[in-house]
Every structure is written in structure tokens, then in C-alpha cells.
Length: 116
Image 1 (cartoon, rainbow, N blue to C red):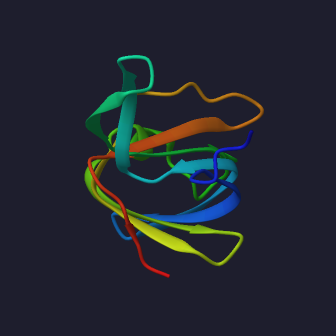
Image 2: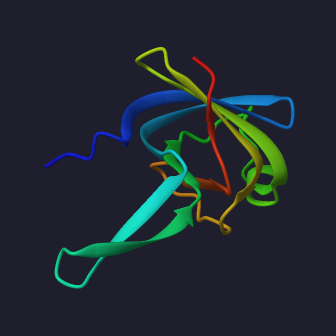
């Protein structure tokens, strides 16, 4: 079953006054994870942050070094459905390799907010 809280497609990411397009995006908004306890008779809760992963086509305007170093940025993700989310104080998870297919970009944040 597909998770109704994940959004897929292409998107525009704005971070540090830079804007770039990601393809094959997967976005998971922040929320609560509930873990089953006592064989379905209860659960425990913990907070989960937001994650945005996508593929960046590296070209003359894309700077992989700058993206790899991003932290404490506000990421605005606009899905191809027209919906938008903000990820305040986001960070790029880890340095990524650049290949002929581009590079995978993963941003995480403690929270996300739906804009529209």
C-alpha cells in the first residue's frame, strides 16, 4: 500500500536564495510515528522529522559543493501537484557523489509546514 503522506514527482527547491529543480522526488512531511505495543492494545509515539530526497541534474548553474555544505537553510519544496511545504532549519544529510546521472540530494529537518 502506498503511504498517503509521501509525495512524489518533480519539484523546485529553494534554499539559501538559490533555486534548483529535482527529479524523482520523495517527500515525507514531519509527524508522529506510532509503534504498536502489547499486540495491538496500545502504542507509543515519537516525533519524526521531514525528509526530501531527489535527483539533481548537475549543470553549469548547479554547485554540488555548495549543496553538500548546506545546513540551517529553509527549503521550500513545491511538488508537481502544486502543493508546497517549508522545511525550516534544514540540512543536507551527507556529501553525495556526482555521476553522469547527476547527484542524489537529501534534506532533513525537524519539522515541515504545508504552505499550500
